[in-house]
Image (tube, rainbow, N blue to C red):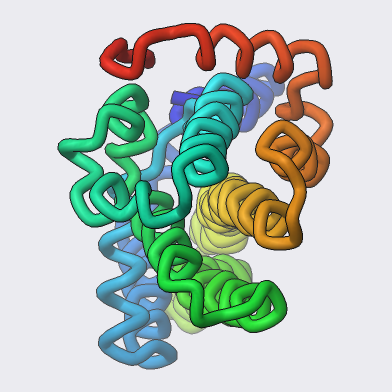
Length: 293
């Protein structure tokens, strides 16, 4: 996992550099300051979010994956599926897609792409708008407006955990300062201590500032950024579906409609025109019962 690798690199760099100058690890272990910082951060997280945001955050964090889920291969599979669906609709009429859309698990077109079928968000988005296209009661402008609203709603909902985690990351350095100040107050308020005894207490107090900043910028904030990147990848998949279906509604042939969808992809994941054309040609020549992925 890339997240785990990044965390290991952060810890190794910080601790390794500290030990290179002769630092002692025992000094960094301050349970009281860990309790202050982490406890205050958790409390602030609960206080600043409602139940929906808390549940969404707790739900998304365990599902984080370091590998790229929406990669070039999956984009090509999506565009191949779109081509097959639109080509069937153009040749046999959109009503011929009704059974495929209503029961994708039994469709010879959808079942060729198990990776896509394993993503309920994409499947729901695609089948819902194909169903509207089959009904024939909405024009391209109305469907585009509805798609935009749905993608915007997805974005706002998906960013709830990002904002919650970012808020914790923003507050951790301040909580580290709180812990450090409380440690300094304790050290200076203790009676009968010599300067040699006060020094270690001050050093221990400053560990709070160190921990707060390290947790914020080394662990929590990168986690929020990682989730934001995943949201962007999902949005790009939805936009690819949107542009392709709208191009078909505006009268373009399936190969051209799929080309519209290709153009909205990020350059790092976008297949070339020849790659997509070759892939579509190979898909078109296969029997509908074969599987991929």
